[in-house]
Image (cartoon, rainbow, N blue to C red):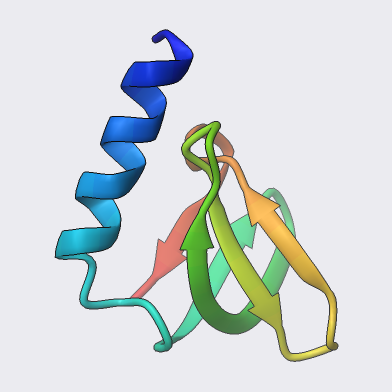
Length: 67
């Protein structure tokens, strides 16, 4: 996807996202990450403010959300 398409997708996601500001638990491989959803970056990765204080982007193809 071209940069303009990614930016449009990001704008649309942000306009519809009810999860921003909500707590989340994510699984990547054998690791569990907890934090708050804050954004989606231009690559389409979910940006989370982790409970540890670190801000990190998680690639959708490699991340599972625990409900």
